[in-house]
Image (cartoon, rainbow, N blue to C red; front, side, top):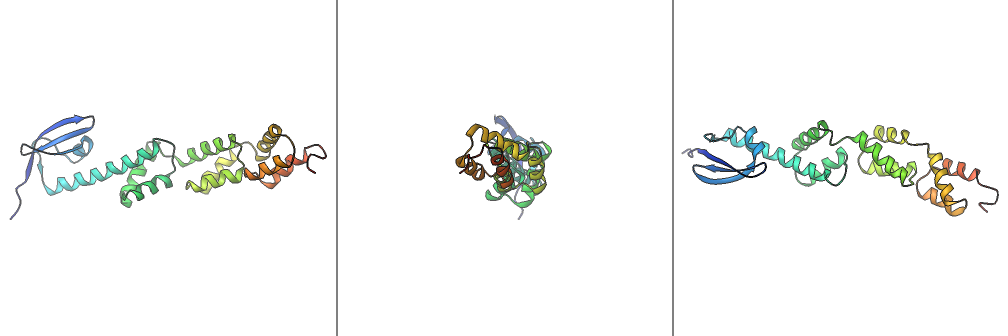
Length: 200
């Protein structure tokens, strides 16, 4: 025997973007307004299987977007990082792709922009290209984005020379530059400009 269909008898806003749905005069659930609108659920609508299916799909979509935007609140993240966060929260593959696509279209996720800005920050903090490349790779950024970000920086040898000018010539400075990911050629160029005897 088929169950009787429930009818939406009222919708009451309980907080911004959230609505309490009453079915047949009884409180049912508090749901996102956007999901209700997309599912075509309003006063007088019957909650049949089709509408419930659409509602569930919209709720999954909104949950995926909530998880993804929460990850962006503290800092910029790559598409790979967002996808990883969504997977860790159990968001299905199709929903992950849709959420990521929405954020990319909105300009909230942009791997090329992230690569450029992160590389610039690390360069300002005295990182060489190897350290910058490693950081960007760990964030899941692609080879093209990384290459473009490194190309946009001042040449590595110039950055190494500026650091060495602040730290002064000597073995400690040379070791520091190597530890900070500067290429051997960049360090050798800096050392070549030091006065004789700076490195015993």
